Length: 300
Image (cartoon, rainbow, N blue to C red; front, side, top):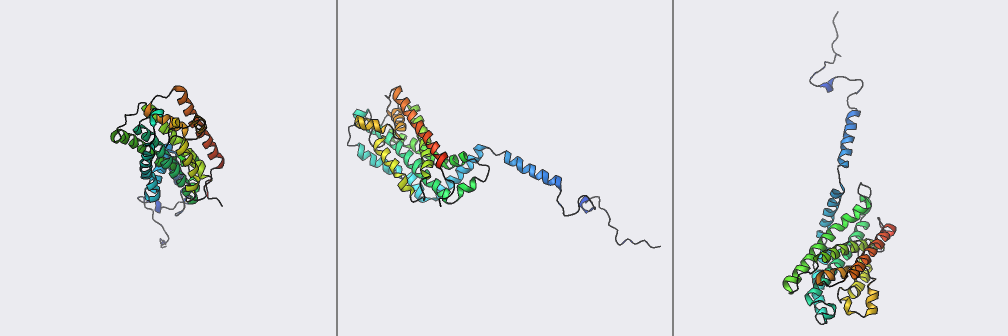
């Protein structure tokens, strides 16, 4: 009797996939392999760090800043123009009552101007733009926390402000004949604290700003009162006592007190402590406002 071998399937030891396996038919997923892939992806996600996420957000925001010519102009050239205007204003004043030379007053006002323009104005516009483009909303769907999103967005502006502040001080010493800062630790502390205050205020201001264009209006009040009352254009010691006591309550005044003491020295411990506490109080107020009213998606 002839044996029918037409339906016989040979096995190939070199190719186990060709062997019939009732428990795992060809073309079906392997549960063990799927579990391994999921574990690998989860492990990759677990290896991400806050520093890495902040760095990625900062690089992306820096790229957007470089591509935005208007924002880049405000961040790079506006402080230079404002310092030039400041020189014309301070040149006609008697700065001896404030204990500052013209070069020292320009350095103090220049650092404050950089903090206002580069951090506050630029970051407010950036946050509003990212919100209206739904970037902030999409970022919240990932593993990045809310604090990391805000901090990563602020990183380029903060780094640029610190670099420009250092350039302002170096230019004051090299080109204006001013002495080197007498209390550099206070200058650094004031600049860092001012960066934090301005970043927090920018996030709070973005909550009441509907469009990028309207950011020029919503940021104007703080810029004006800081320029006239916090020591950016006019040293506080040149103002009448009653006016100066009111101006002590402004957001930038504590920062400018620290910067001025770092540049010219001579401030007592009580005044410096009050300046630091005032700046910290405005930071706390701003953070509370951000937690309460900050918007992550467009206002409809």
